[in-house]
Image (cartoon, rainbow, N blue to C red; front, side):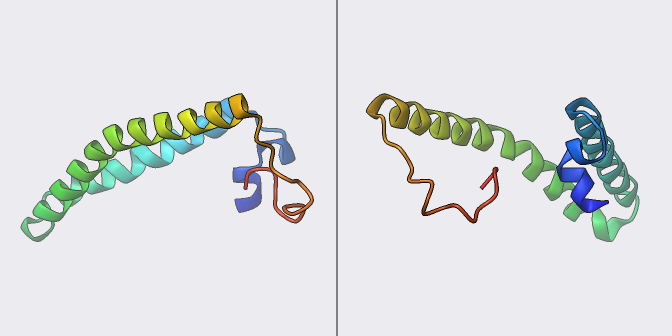
Length: 93
């Protein structure tokens, strides 16, 4: 099951279904956190989790642009990675 979640081609799922599953899990997590705000002990913790999730957006934007910059730089300079050294790694690593 866990293997099929990361590799949709194994179960016949397409990427859209995978993204919808991920969105559903995230929505369920946020809804559980929302219901935990009812208890006073968890209110501050839940608020800090929400603020952390919101603050991750600008960081991920900057990080994605940084990765894109180096990817373009490596393509322009035609730096190649020797595939023989990394033959044991998977496709996404």
